View (cartoon, rainbow, N blue to C red):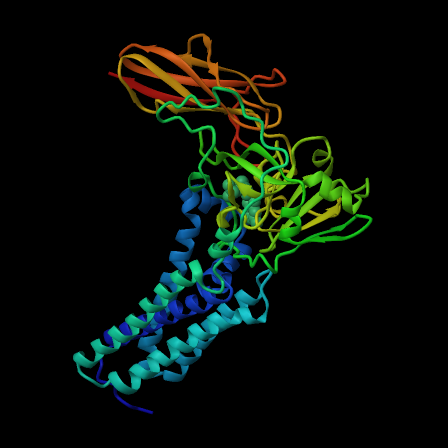
Amino acid sequence: MDTVHPAPPRAWAAAGLVAALAGLAVGHLAAALTAPRAAPLSALADTVIAIVPLEVSHWFIELVGTLDKPLLILGLGIGVAAVGAGTGVLWRTRPWLARAAVAALGLVGAAAAVALPGLGAAAAGPSLLAAAVALGGIEWWDRRFGAREAEGRRRFLAVAGGVGAAALAGSWWAGRVGPAGVEADREAVALPEADAPAVEPGPVADFEVDGLAPYRTPNGEFYRIDTAITVPRIDVDAWRLRVHGMVDRERTYTFDDLLGRELIERDITLCCVSNQVGGDLIGNARWLGVSLADLLAEAGVDPAADQLVSRSSDGWTAGSPTELVFDGRDAMIAVGMNGEPLPVDHGWPARLVIPGLYGYVSATKWLTELELTTFDAYDAYWITRGWSTPRPIKTQSRIDTPRSKADAGAVVVAGVAWAQHRGVSAVELQVDGGEWRPCDLSDVATGDTWRQWKYEWDAPSGDHTLTVRATDGEGEVQTSEVRGVVPDGATGLHTVRVTVA
Ligand SMILES: Nc1nc2c(c(=O)[nH]1)N[C@H]1C(S)=C(S)[C@@H](COP(=O)(O)O)O[C@H]1N2
Ligand SMILES: [Mo]
């Protein structure tokens, strides 16, 4: 076995790296055609998230914000590429050890995918295929090109690189229209008219000021927060919503069952408990769906079941107080968002929306199960990770414009304020620490949405500090006490410094 390979280690490293990337790309394609969440890097990233200590993930999210997932994937991709390069070099002298290393990596990816909630043994396929392609690639290189001159080696790189690129292009296509693609299904859905349409807020729901968040957030601009590395792509024909737990009768609904029920339409503002003061993890949409209280009533809820656990197809859970679902608010299973079927990123085909609760305890996307239980018996996903059991949303207000500069003279200062379900009754603006000045408020139909505010400011030149505060529908003034997002939402007043010239 003492073959001396003429190719330098550098060339072996390049061959190993390209073979590994081609393997990843083919694995990705296989997953895109079957179960996108089983793609090697996606499954590995999910596993890292599941096993990394909480302190580490908090630290990382604080450092990079919503870039956390792309960076994790990138890091893992670089890791696999590096292992590929190392394996190439190792193959030169210890081919069996190198083969074992590639096989081991494939098995790790396969195990990670099989262990994901909602995926079965077939989820091992993409990672095993990726390892097989990488192995085959280096083997081929070893036999045919390892001994050749640079010319032949380049051919290998071109072929392997081409396979990888073609597989990636194929994955993109499969994600849109292929067997695991759901866009076509989604676009084919004709949502029925609402039986109970949303009440229009009034003539001035939107001040339409430049830079001010519109009253209704377009779907494409709606913030997205979830733990999904690859969003679940649900086959709507196979989808079922199961209601079980502490109920008189278990019930199961199809998507058509939901569409055939009485549909309500409501404007409801959704926000994330991780939103910083002045942050943009908030949006307002017109949701179409079925009343959650009606649906649960059909199952007959045990009065002792104080917690409603909603579960997503990827295993994520939220726990909401059952009491709030039945207190008359418009809690719903939403199937439409701003006149369209739910976008895949926002929970297709159905999600929960409960006005007055942060998303992590109410807004389950890719909903598959509703389980009636108790808060004593079960802690949902974020509760086991240091966040509080459900508490009311904190009253907040935000200055959208101006954010840094303005021309001297008449300046419209404007923003949004929210205290979902209690509503916003007043907003005040403070300039340079002076008295609180009342702002104009837009029209709203209910307290479940945010409310725009504006103030016409005669701005003198110089540097100024603007601060905003809201009063909720119960007369409670927003607190100035500064607190972070953990465990139940940030408090403090939003302040911007503006240079007026
Ligand atoms: N399945 C699932 N649903 C989820 C989450 C999640 O991680 N997985 N995150 C929740 C959180 S924390 C928030 S703030 C909202 C955000 O909904 P959006 O992405 O549609 O804005 O979804 C909620 N629903
Ligand atoms: Mo959230």
